[in-house]
Length: 329
Image (tube, rainbow, N blue to C red; front, side, top):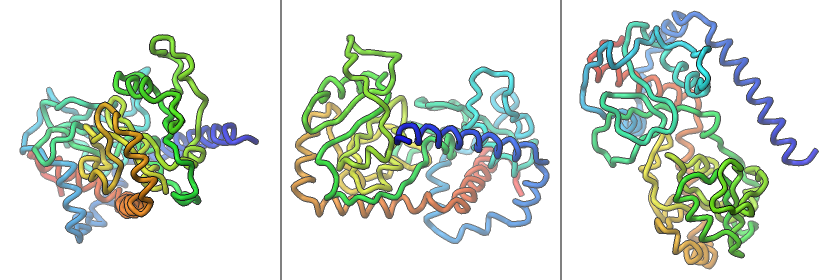
């Protein structure tokens, strides 16, 4: 069985398992979850300043009441069986946390790639980085199945190819600009995986699927944002390769706004003009590369405790409800 086929079968099985487990959970009475939250007193989990810092990072809007015109109740949040675009993974990820709260509590949400500032406090997957300023975009850990993949890398940085790899969809102008500049460069193995949009007839840009396992053969992995946050920094930062990207403009549960250039990733200019120069620097200074890798492995630890992640999600929602003037036990 070749690697591509094995990867596709594994993804299909994971998808089937996801829907079976999620709909089984969805069928359970919500009262069970509310009892569980009250019994375990999640508010007592705030033993760490770091945890409270994360809660305040995700949820930092000016206290604002909601009403029936700009929000729905927890009880009204139902799986959209009749809709064509269901955002199933978003729905179930949010439902996992909402089900622990009273059905009469109000909230607002937007699914998908969110790049604007909502008018009222809204639960989202992503938002523009505003560096500590109040924002109506309240981040929850949504679309986890796609975005939060961590790996164990068996290859050291020194054992990898001295090249940069990029395999992704190319729809946005900034990704097109990157392809125009570096496709065919001897230091870059880059290609687009989508066939629905071919810029100026560049059919040679289309390359076959490349698994994460295959991309781990390269020292440098390009992490350019798409419509909002880039998907791959999570697995790249858990590997022994270096993430290479301009300074991010958007953030998610991964708190991309806290990542430090030169400490967590190799920062390149917005026009990508210094890409090769930066790669050559870290190849010539492997100790600097290894330092970034150590920092990244330390950074991702905070997202790998599933029990703690679930608790933080509940506490973010609790703060959201309190900030919207709704009493919560």
